[in-house]
Image (cartoon, rainbow, N blue to C red; front, top):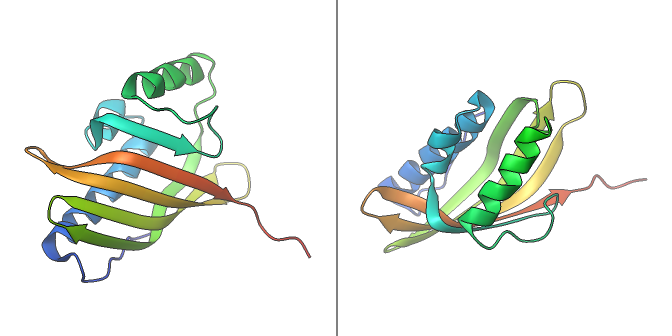
Length: 139
């Protein structure tokens, strides 16, 4: 799956979109260092499936260390941002997209994601990640 952006953020929006693609490619590759290179040191992470909001990078690291030690790291065939929209205002940006996670042995899950990014000396970094699992409607 490819990421597409509208043209309201220009070159910065393209950089952010490429960073989001690389973030999820790094997750699939199990490259935590590369994944973390897209996160600000003060990132907050709020996700439906996590045990409450993770308000610091240390809390995120503790969660991931426990998950990985328990052998519970998700095994995915696909993890990709779709329907991406990026808006940029000076040194702040918001990226909104649907994250598609396809396990190797199960149905795909879709999450609605909002990432807030700040421009740093090292490029754009995610300072807040909010993800809500979308539950399919039942008939």
